[in-house]
Amino acid sequence: MNFQSEKQIILNFYDAIESSKIEEIPNVLSHYCSEDLLWRGFHPFNEIRGLKNLYSQFWQPFKKSFFNYQRRMDIFLAGYNTISGNEGVWVVSMGHLMGLFDNPWIGIKETKKIAMLRYCEFSKIQNGKITEVAMFFDIPHLMLQAGIKAFPSETGISLVQPGPLTHDGLMFNEQDTNEGNRTLEIIENMINDVKVWTSTTGNSLIDELKKSWNDNMIWWGPTGIGSTYTIERYANQHAGPFRETFKDRKFNGHLCRVSEGNYGGFFGWPNLTLTPKKMFMGIKTAPKSSEMRVIDMYRREGKKLTENWVFIDLLHFWKILGIDILKNLK
Image 1 (cartoon, rainbow, N blue to C red):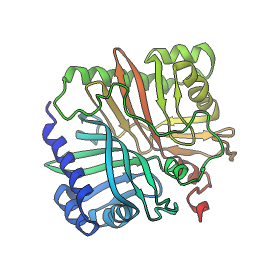
Image 2 (cartoon, rainbow, N blue to C red):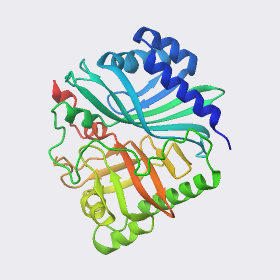
Image 3 (cartoon, rainbow, N blue to C red):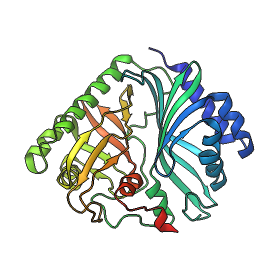
């Protein structure tokens, strides 16, 4: 299946949004998007329905805050989503939105300096229009650049995250369908392993991970949890501690899951419902159920996965548990 026309729509939309003045954005949205577009974003944006609301709640304040922003993509792909209720062609991009952080944004004080906002965006195309979007940001990483440490501790380390080691994530041209199918199959096998989630420590966890991951894997985690490198360190610094922290875990499924070439990913709304049973990210809380909205992007190398970029709405997760990170800034 060829996705070149859908890719071009998104690339044209990105160029138009980036180059337009703030007052021109409503016309850009109207040209490229359906009037009843459903836009999903991390807290505090959540779900936004309709172009007027999207302009006033997201694009207008964003453009005012980040002067002369650039979309610096590391991954760009398209695929056909077969998940029931959301079938169709989705275009995905991931990287950083870079600009001069010149005015406050969602309560975060401006720095008057360059800022890099990690993002990943899934866009559904129907009849030549964008009808649905999931645009997730690593807001705590932006806070860190502004001198604000949102969470007391992390098991990995937070840093500006590069794109793929192989520098081949921008798939502007048509790709081999068979390669994309292989990538999606491996991602789905990995998901099935995680669903079982029987191993928490030691060799059993590492053996489980080795089914889907190369030894030199990199898990590019969100700020507050952090990144980690190699299967052994991933098991010790994220997978093991994460599994030991939560109980009553429920997998809610995904809304979209696509792949192209050696890359693929998914998002859910929410992906997981789970209950912390002990301190998480340096924060102690009552054992109450919360949820995680997640985007995962992957690079396959051979028959296994090697890189994983992860976006988790940690602000939403903690807000449900009674801790409003953004409100505490004021």
